[in-house]
Image 1 (cartoon, rainbow, N blue to C red):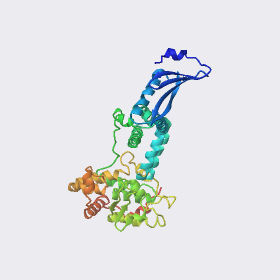
Image 2 (image 1 turned 180 degrees about the horizontal axis):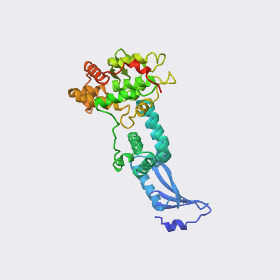
Image 3 (image 1 turned 135 degrees about the vertical axis):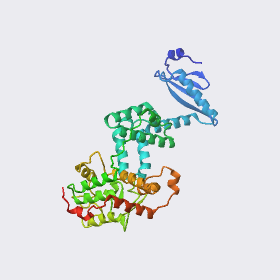
Image 4 (image 1 turned 90 degrees about the horizontal axis):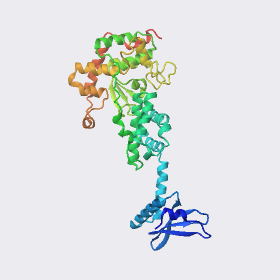
Length: 401
């Protein structure tokens, strides 16, 4: 058997020669002085040679380990030369399977299930906040500590809520990669408990009926574009989400119902909102203004575009309700007041708000629409909210901004 001393002392000769270690391992000493490890074996009756590497880059101990692995392949019926090529290809493929590649594959699978705006936001957060730090690294080389450091940096320059969402997205990428055989663990999932939960703060909302009516009256006499005032009244009457009202189209209004399609609904399920008499008055008041627009509440400057995303919030702020009530708060107002007045109708009120039932089985099997009761509650709410208020059409003649 060979020793390191004997290998170091081996000098080149006029012809290359071999030094044998045993069990097929040999060192080829070339005339140039280079020394190469080879393993000679027989596979399917033919003699073959496996190149292991050059000495001293590959030590004697490493060469023997490589020989032993090759012998194990032979016992398993495998050709060591082919196994070597396959392992090299797998290693190269793993190097190409970086986090960015895996993330874009995950995104291509998930994006069709999301709204376009959310999909764009997810991709933007990856490209700006994650890929510069982790994108070029192979999936199996990324440790929990590396992910934690990246998330902490996002938390320092952005916000805890943004950092939390980014960590969730990194975790989703790893879970998808594990399912595809491109990762073994989820380092972003491991570190979840290392971050304090982000406290959620409810959005400001007035939940006393008298105060709510006073607020709505104050808002409606605040100088503003007539369409904005009508949209705010419609929002209060329907308790819909502000974005759903802002983007409402005439195609969605049918008789005394407003059908929000699945692609616009937060729950990804179409949602039918019964319209009270007062809500229908709003629709008729705005119709002449938005004539020719696909939107029920078009923008003040461009009739073919929806109203500004911030118009309703700005109107509430100008009326003096900044920090006290936001457009989304009408949902809390409706839920609190109507649940107190109709405690046995909790499930129906949740259905009117398009809330997802906490009981998933109930969400799947309870398909009762309760439409008659929903219409009655919608009308009761409108009567309570707008008692002695001027008709919707008069809002168009109040001071404009």
